[in-house]
Length: 428
Ligand code: GLU
Image (cartoon, rainbow, N blue to C red; front, side, top):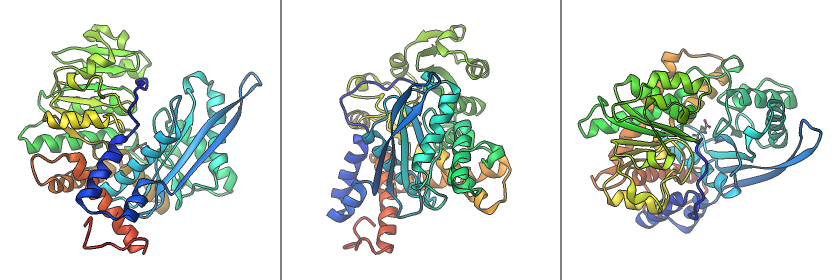
């Protein structure tokens, strides 16, 4: 993952700014806006952890349960040194929108621990993962709040978390968490589902401008699970991957990188800036400013901001990270005609397959990889088409359209629960 860039703009100011615009255009009431503007519940627990050397360290942790009008709270848990309450809150809000936009029956939540997992031993990491679940066990559940992986958490960690939950509750409850290893009730295809979903959104967008992926140039920032699987899928579909980077930097080759080889190297632990045989060594900043058709920020928030926004030359930005653009950058790029395929649409494939995993756990009937991918294709194409239809005018942004649709559905559920009374069909 790329390091979080120090930047003064508030994380996911974009969410607030978009909500403000929708509120004005759709005449949302103060009550509707205050339901959308704040989480239902925020929990903060400082977790004491016994380290291998016998000392005890305290790790701040969070779970924000944003909205559950459409179903149980849903969203990942991230382990990152820059985790903060406000960040988790905004990411939980994005989850509520994402689940609503894709039409899956979940609300939104997010969790995090302020920790650099690279500084922990494997045993410490396992103890921390279990401790997190012990602390939050009464707040989560298959019909309450369903965590999943996020930045720096993976199926192995999720397996420990499930085990801890089941020990505490004394029952088998695989549907309490998604992104599990296959042997513990994980779903086929979940590991690369975020990437496959993003690739489908990009393909559908390119169709609207009469292009297919053939030789379309792509630069990917972030080569973790999401970025690396996206590179593989796009390469298999005929796109030309010209640059990739991880947190230490990357490589650029205008003729196209040998994607299969670099994936083998990355997946066997080699750092990308050491893979210079593939092209010219570049920094993360240089990658973002390359003259490519498609730029994919696939690491962390706010990497495109007021400092570098004027130097962005890509025609399309596929937001595989959550919140990679600041408000200022988003507005600047929109004015400049850069097409932004927003996070709540582009990276929603992960939570869609998390939903499939939950359905399989509850029914006890497991699907093949082909079935999972065919269903994912259906959900992603549908979400893209609905967003495209809502966009109506050429000039409108995909982000605004996606927000309008997502907000409308959340407010519909709030109305059906009797929590709000809609006036004049506002927001409908
Ligand atoms: N962490 C992923 C996201 O931000 C997946 C969440 C989930 O599957 O619940 O969308």
